[in-house]
Every structure is written in C-alpha cells, then in structure tokens.
Image (cartoon, rainbow, N blue to C red):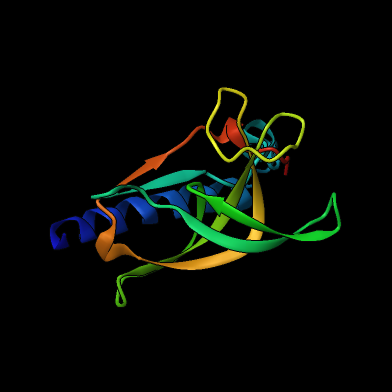
Length: 141
C-alpha cells in the first residue's frame, strides 16, 4: 500500500487548497464571487480501501432534533493532512434526503450535511480518493 501514500497525500492537499481558495478568495470588484457561485466551502469526498469504501462512525449534535445522534458515513471533508504521520483529519458528512431525513444508503436525492465530528484517518490503508459534486452539500456559505 505504500505506493499510494504520496499520491493520496497530494490529492488531499489539492482539495484543501481548493477549499481554502473558495473560503478566502476575495477580489476588488467581485468580492467573494467564487464562494457565492459554489455555495459551500466543502468538497465532499470518499476514500477507497482494498476492501471498498471507508466508513466511519461518530456522534454529533443534531440541531433540528436537539439530540445527540450516531452517524455512520462514507462521506468526508478533508480538514488537515499530516504527511509526517501519514494521516489526515476529516469531518464526517452526514447523508440526508432533500427533506433532512437520515439516509444510510445512497440515492439520487442525497444531500450531505457537515458535522463537527472530526476523525483522524490513517492514510496507509487508503488506495484512492474520489471528490464529489459540491452540489451534494445541504448548506450554503
């Protein structure tokens, strides 16, 4: 698996750079036009392992129900990369349908909601990364 480490790290670094560009790019005449077009600061992604998709579980506070809920997901937002430790910190993205109901499985009406849950992922087991359409994100900037 070591042959994938450098490539995965480079891909994740590119995704962070694009997310930062969306957040911080301001121009003299158009302000935050890029952020307004994209309407999110998150590029959702999935990780591939030799066994399939990486799935992680975490507990988060649901603002709608006011309760703590368990979230199992294969959708993530890259936050930080630590190439010296061969790991990355990701936020869990919680899958819902267009009405905000939990969706444990993929369907064409999938929406992703960013959570505050952060998890460290060992990149040595990751063999691929697939960025997804930013239109899957439920929230606006």
